Structures are given as structure tokens and as C-alpha cells.
Amino acid sequence: MLGTRPEIIKFSPIIRECTRVGLEFSIIHTGQHYSHNMDKVFFEQLRLPNADCNLKVGSGTHAEQTGKMLIGIERVLLKQEPQIVLVEGDTNTVLAGALAAAKLGIKVGHVEAGLRSYDRQMPEETNRTLADHCSDLLFAPTAKARDTLLNERIPKQKIFVTGNTIVDAVKHNIKIANEKGKTRIQEKLDLKPRTYFAVTIHRQENVDNPQRLHGIVEGLEKVQKDTGYPIVYPIHPRTKKNLKKLCLQFNKISTIDPLDYLSFLRLESNARLVLTDSGGVQEEACTLNVPCVTLRDNTERPETLEVGSNILAGTNPDKIVKCTRVMLEKKQRWKNPFGDGKAGERIVKILETERGD
Image (tube, rainbow, N blue to C red; front, side, top):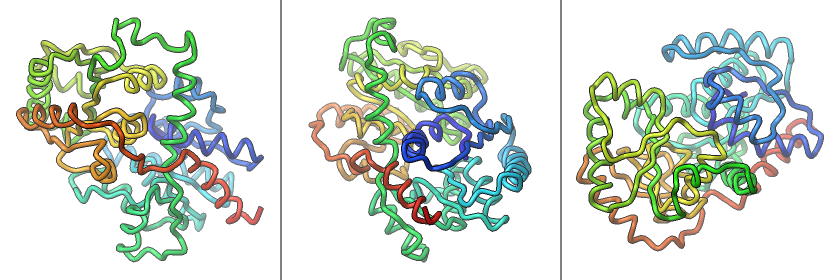
């Protein structure tokens, strides 16, 4: 069950492994992301089979999206009668998929279970917590995530520490991205490795909050002036819309259209530093050995803070500058806390055992 760009990426190692070992599966796509760059191109670039079913839910309020998904997912599950439904992460797709399956008495497996920001203003926090508590198999990426689940009294026999499939995906896909002729994003932008910063901003709590969005814009402008590094931002449509509404604009930041996955992965991997509010980018940057400044007050990836690959800057302009300076001085020698790149294999082996294969 998937519906967004991060889910496609993080499910890709599991899909490949299921194919390799001959484990029967089908892909249900809710259509939560529905533009070509946010969806279909990812299947094409990652060389994945097309979804067997696309609900084409599209945009809407959280209630509208989740309600439409529940109705559509239930119909598909009643028809297909799967033994296990897998969901990944913290989106509305995850919540709807887990609830629909649980109510039908179908086992639920939650990939990337046990993450917590402890910020209930984030809709993702509600989604991931509820999904964990109605799942039968909880694939925790780290020991810390496992301990979180145990502290919430989830039975230990349901929990499996597997590593994070983002490591599998990055290791596999960076090879594709670097193949000759596959992506020329740096050449198009005339950027040399380690001579620029990359930015992503998209989270609701940042881009829908005028004060926070203003702080980010001012902070990035100050970072560029302070460090002299060019800053490249593939701008998210939601952010672009809200900047226009607030009459805010970037002056020294290069905003470009959203990138396909392989182009962004190459841009990110060669950056001197990444500034982001994305949980997945925090993980990718850590895996790629690129310092990260997170434009949030909290993170559900505390492991990145502990190993020193990441720092929380919030949205105060001066703090963003200060944290950027700190990360520029960091030695890029941390140990990746998210595993060895074999999470997909471990998850599929557990699924085979649960099916009795």
C-alpha cells in the first residue's frame, strides 16, 4: 500500500526482494501524490512494476483524503483477500491502509514503525502512532524505535528491528543516478560537487504557517550571505503557492522546478550541506554522508542528532545561520544508524515466515 513519493522510494527494496524470491504481491496506490514528477516518474526511474490498482484519491483535507482512501482500500481488500497488508511511514495512506485492513481482520505490517516526534500538531505523528497500534508486525528501523514501541506497551513479539529501507534504496539508486547520461542536473545548473547547498521545504507546519515560512525565507537568505555558498531549492508546489499568497520571495536563492527522484538524489549527494524539513531527506543525507540542518523544532529521527549528521535549527533566521556554521565545521565521519542496506531482505524473510512459506 503506497501513495506518495517517499513511500514509493522506501518500498522499492521490498518490492524488488519480493520479486527476487518469488513472493506473490500486488501494489495498491491511493493516488495521494498524483502529478507525474511526484508519482509515475518514480516507478519508471526505480524500474518498478506499475501499481495493480490506483484509487486516484488526489488532494483534499485530511478527512476527505483519508475517508476516500478507506472506502477505496476496503473494496480492493475485499476483492483481493490478501494475507498481509504492508504500509510504510506516516502518511494518510498509511493510516487508511492500516485501519481498513485491521477492521477486515487482515494482518497489518508497518514498515518504519516506532518513529515519534512527540508533536501532535503534526498530522504525521497521529498517523504513525495509530498505525503502530493497530499493526501486527512492526518493522522498527532502529533499536531506539523498538524501545519506543515497547514503552508504549506493544508486545515485543510483534516488533522486529530491520534497519531502514531508505539505506537499501539510496545504495541501489545512487548507482542508477550516477550512470552516464542518466541525470545531468549538476551540469545543467553549472554546479561542482561540494560547492553548493541544497534545500527542501514542504511540511504543513512550516509552509502553512506565515511566521515560520517568513523565518525560513529570511534564514536562507542570511545563510547565503553569510557563507557565500549558492543555494538551490527545487520548490514544492505548496510552498510556491503560499509564498505568492504572502508576497514573499527569494532574492539570492535559486528556485527551480521540482526534480525527479534520481536528479534530486544526485543533487543531494554532491551538496556541501542540506537544509530541509523532510524526515526522509534527513535519513538520506545521513546515509550519503552530507551534513544536514533541519528546519524544524523536533525530529522523529533523533538518531541523526546523536551521530552528529544533523542539527535542529527551527525557523528562527539567526539560529538557522548559527546551525549551518556548526554543520559546516563537522567532520563527516558518522556511523549510519539506519542499518546496512539489507532491511528489505529482512522484512521479506519475516513476511515469508508469517505466511508459512
